[in-house]
Length: 338
Image (cartoon, rainbow, N blue to C red):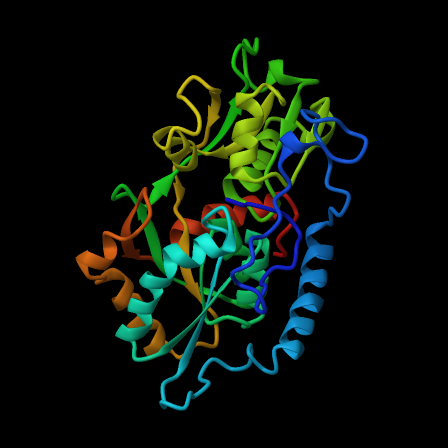
C-alpha cells in the first residue's frame, strides 16, 4: 500500500503541503509518457533503512526535540501522543483532513494531546516507528513487520474493511492483453510495482513470482518499482503498461468512485487473504497506555466510526500472529534478518 518511494518520510515543518507523486502518465526525462521509468534514486532495503535513519535524525534536530520521548508534558499537563500516518489520501493535507477527527477522539479518550504527522510513503512509517520517533502508526502490514523486525513494534489493532480484517494482493493487466496463463505467458511484458514498503504492491507479488522460479527484474521486459497505487491502476487502464500490482480494496474503491471501470483492467492474479492495515505502537510505549489506546480504537463511538473513509468500517484487537506469514515472506526474500 504506497504512494511514493524514498522521499523525506515525515514532513514535520509542512504537514499541509501536498507531496510530489511520480505519475507514470507524465513521462520522465528523455522517456515519453507511457514508458516505465525505473526510479533513479532506488535504494536497497538496507540502504533505505540507513538513509531513513539519517534523515530522521536530521529532522529530529531541526524540530528541537519534537521527536523525543512520548510523554512530553504540555502546559495543560497532558502527555503528547505522536501519531504517524502513511499516505492514506492523495495529499498530506487530505490525509490530515480525513484522519485528524478520528485521532483527536482517540487522544481524548486516553487523556492525551495529539501530534499527528503524515509520511510521504509507507517505508518511512516503518522507520519512524522502529526508531521510536512516533508512538503509534497506522500502517501497511509489511511496514509493521519491518518495524517489528528492526524495532520490536507491537500491533494493537487491525483495521476492518467492510467488517473484515483481510484483503488480497492483486496483479492487473491492461484491457485486451493476450495472457493465456499467468505468470508463464507474461515473460517479456512490462511490469509496474509499487514501493518496497508496500505489502500488496511489492512484498507479496514478488514472493509469489519467486516461488514460481521467476526473478521479476529479469523475467519482465520492462520492470519498475515506486509507482503510487492509483498511478499503477491508471497505467494499465490506459494501456501504458502491461501489468501492475495493487490490492483489491483500493481497486474496488477506484471503481466505486468512478475513477476506473470494472473492465478498465483485468485481475490476472489474486493472493490468499492477507491481514489488513495495522495500528501498531513503539516497543517502549507504556503497556497501560497501549491497552488504553487499543480500547479506544475498538470502542470508537458510532458517530466517529461513521467518519472513517470508505471502505474502512472500524478496528479490531489483534496480535502478531496474523502477520507472521508476511514475516516469513520477508525472510524468504532475504530482506529480514533471521
